[in-house]
Length: 369
Ligand SMILES: *Cc1c(COP(=O)(O)O)cnc(C)c1O
Image (cartoon, rainbow, N blue to C red; front, side, top):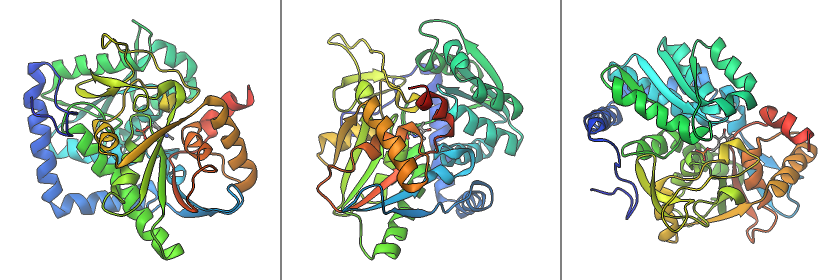
């Protein structure tokens, strides 16, 4: 097996999916070389999604630092996930696929996918654990309004892990007509690369914006890590620069900090698993970080010493959530609140942080505490 990122990545999937992954990879390479693809993505980014998103200097949140927030919370649908969904929908169209399947946990990726399917007139099926559907009623209703069919998954823990298995099962039976729209930089090659490139717009814009605002590159770039897509999108802008890169995981889902090498959902990476390689359940207040794996490129960056991965607890994230609201007038999602929680103790003064989403979806959870 050819692995893509050092000892990580690859394609650990049933034989029947290999031709579809080959087709996707070839279509992706062609799109990358076609200026019309980039122009269309750029146009949709500007006129539909709200790019470029602003860079905000947070003057009161972290005294003694110059903390710049990359405002993906201001993107259409409220988080960075739309960058990826838009790009993959364009790619699906190029491949002649009119049907999209996706899995969703909290519903954020499902909403982004349903949104782009509505925009392009594509059929949309979203698999979601029955337990998650109960917990995330508003997102289920939003997806329905957008014209997506949400299919409940009623086995196992009835959450994201099983929903992913069901989406893969659907795709195996429908590859001729269907594109599987993965929501983070995980899964078999070429998905981690596609998602990274579609999210790299975050780092590209932020690099230009911080030089414009401060005249300097940041000393450190920080982002939360669930599957790792907003973080890899930010990091990619600074990989060639002398910039420290820090990913922040939820302490109950620290697959890079405390995980082992194992295969999950089609690729080898660093996964929360026991000694026998059995995947363990993640546990976090933030649904977007509550996943036992993370992208293979992050595992490779960690091993190479190029990026560091630390963690924050539920309580630390909640405190940072409240602090950003009361000091800056910005209500962050609980996911990037984990990254915010680590800012104060950084040695560096000039900090760039990806504010990956807004916190409206988390208000009930936070106020219930
Ligand atoms: C889904 C989500 C995340 C986690 O996903 P990544 O792939 O790690 O970026 C982070 N922040 C927000 C706001 C999300 O919706």
